[in-house]
Image (cartoon, rainbow, N blue to C red):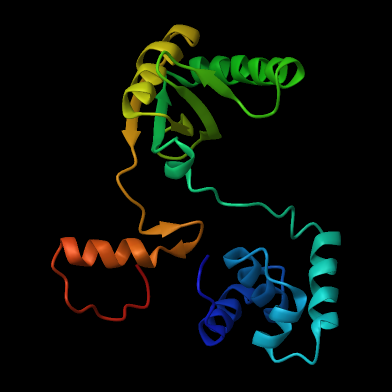
Length: 212
């Protein structure tokens, strides 16, 4: 759970609200719930200096009705769950036409999988399994597919990338990246990770930059 410091959340809410579709109060609530989705309306009211939780409940309900809050979820500790390897696979082709064909194949496979098996894609491996978290198709300087997931081991991720994907999708070129550590996680700076890294890199003091 991320620590909520009202003054800092308010400052961030002010900056984002100036260029978003939410006012400062709604953005404050949204950021607070992003840090801890289990926070009650009474707890929100306390850190916002509201009289009671009715006001925050109104703002939260309005954001839900307007589609600003899509759903509430959890953040598992995947290492303790038994899927310690977080991987990213970059999938490229020689041209846009080939990538488009792969996109179409993926859409068909995803639709069939959802109809017959379930909404969470799990691929059994010899020594464990792969579970997919996100699949993106990106454009910009280069066009590619991006696959993010969890694996029971680095080896399982490598086999999935180099053998499984290549056999299912022709003309694909893949690159496997294994996550070493995170300094920012789900929009928040990972303070425990930063503390450990400062010890590893022998960093005693740090400044206060306005941006990273």
